[in-house]
Length: 118
Image (cartoon, rainbow, N blue to C red; front, side):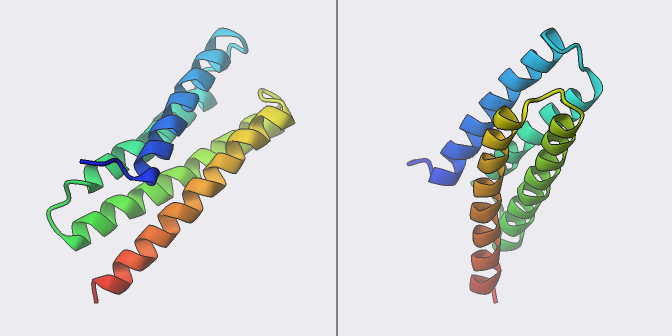
């Protein structure tokens, strides 16, 4: 089965989140916010992967909607890490832009799926 661009991008994003988590824990000694970031940032791709094998269109929409919520939460943690100076503005803005791209893709997927499910 050919992987969708959304699946590929979300997995690449999760890998970046894992490396960012390691950096925050090892170099910055930050344990609380980084754990939240790790949880939400890796959940995006996991929910997209689950959606591939959804039992129905409503199940697919639900999984993709959860991924959309998780990417929004991830962006919140990244903004908080930037505003508390655990992350520099340049490094945070780069990954926040990836969040924005995934948000757009997920929003379009959910919207289209809901329209097609009517």
